Length: 389
Image (cartoon, rainbow, N blue to C red; front, side, top):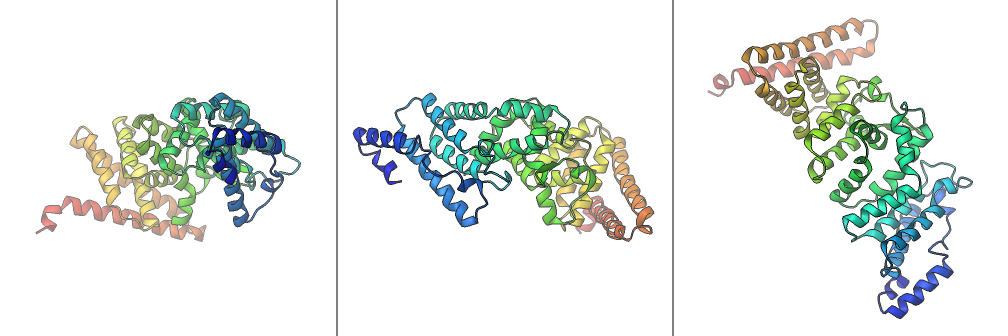
């Protein structure tokens, strides 16, 4: 830190420190790399991140007159020495290793204040240096789970270097856009799942989790949907590079990856994304005539709200918007009947298995409660004028 401050005093001092940096530290590489590849306590991790922040300042200030190309060359040399793949003898557990996080701290410190075009160059240089485009193409074009180690590598690389170190929301919007935009929508959805939606355990993405199980409670739901819904909200609210339709297409593709999610999980994701995105998604389905699917989602939204003690107010607001885009009164009535028919099917299906499996008692209760609450809301809307007097 003191050296980096001295570089600001004069050109001669900066040249002297730059020479010292290159020779003494072999290009900032004089620090030990073994420590960052081992398991560290929270305090040790914080100390390491602080160290690499200071190294980033030294690099930034001592090379301030260098061309961007030359600065990125030094950055990539630094990454080469830190990368887990080049330290496999000491990096035994990539999921717990903080090396990439430390490099991310270093990189973000170096490029702080750069304009977007220079940051784009930095992104491309670092990714190309580590062959990331090739790795991403392999995992998004292959059967999910067929390259577990490579999927984990992609997840750790992008999150720890570019996304996790972000301090501001616009920064995160910028970097996630750089990561996703080069790919077609189908691949964007799969890559987003790898980065945020899939539960990561035992060193692998749990691809079928969303198609096989639902969250038991509000806290579990946050683990399921919190991270990916946050990213979708960031793209929707803080990036001008994404249209509303693109975000809806990503959600539609992702909820069918690698096979259709359980409808309750689709509802859980929409609730986590917020009323604005959820309403646009549901209205889009209504415009495209996907009424059976829509009825199932509305019923599941009510179910999730009851399970997690949420108010049905926002669900009813969404329903109002849906009815607003359905052309005729007859079609609106048909749709409402489909929603109620869906509740009936859910209750009957659950009841069928209740005797055989006592664990379904709770599900039966939640389904009946969801129908009850939905009916109450409909009754209040239907008799609003009478009830207000």
